[in-house]
Amino acid sequence: MDLDLDSDMARAAHPTKSKLVETAARLLKTHKPSEISVDLVLSESKISKGSLYHHFADLDELIETALLDRYARWVDISVGAMTQILTTAKTSKEIYLGLVEVTRRSQDRNLSPERFFRAEILTKANSSPRFAAKLKTVQQELTDSLTDIIREAQERQFYNKNIDAKAIAVFIQAYTLGKIIDDISEDPVNQEAYEALINTIIKEVFIKE
Image 1 (cartoon, rainbow, N blue to C red):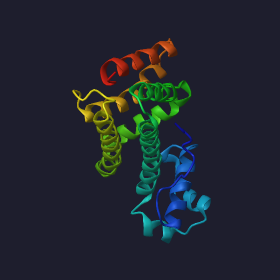
Image 2 (image 1 turned 90 degrees about the vertical axis):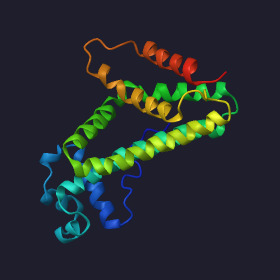
Image 3 (image 1 turned 135 degrees about the horizontal axis):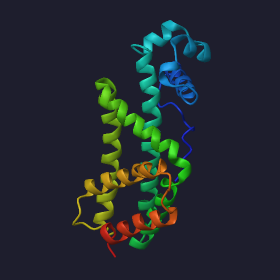
């Protein structure tokens, strides 16, 4: 499960638009959105103001696009990891072992900043209808893709067919983000114990022996 979120930064097709998104994404690593100005973006990207407003209605839309791009790359990584497990596994045990590895990597303490980023994205969607509409599309892509992958695994008798595939897809996303609760704890849970709990739930509830 490759978690290098700095690769293939912009998904936008147009080179100028891609560069603007890349620049905004880079600035977001060291600046809060409120600290980024049009002049700063233009200075860093070497792109004209006219080109910026040709591709984006305003600075906020550019920043929103950069935020969504990062979120969307997490979607690509998540779907890719699950697809790899399904396409290579020949038994339910291999499916389980693959998910154990996904659990280990997704719950890594070093991914705490990424979990906070995802939480911030969801918070922003709650206050911005325009951003929420765009995020819904990206989020739906993840849920639908995972649902399709799980449904196929159910057809191959790897997953419990008595549990709704979409419910499993949402659960997987929820537990990968849920570790954020422990990220801010003064006395974090034992990492191995937490992963063991998740893996037990996966094995006992979802995996068909």
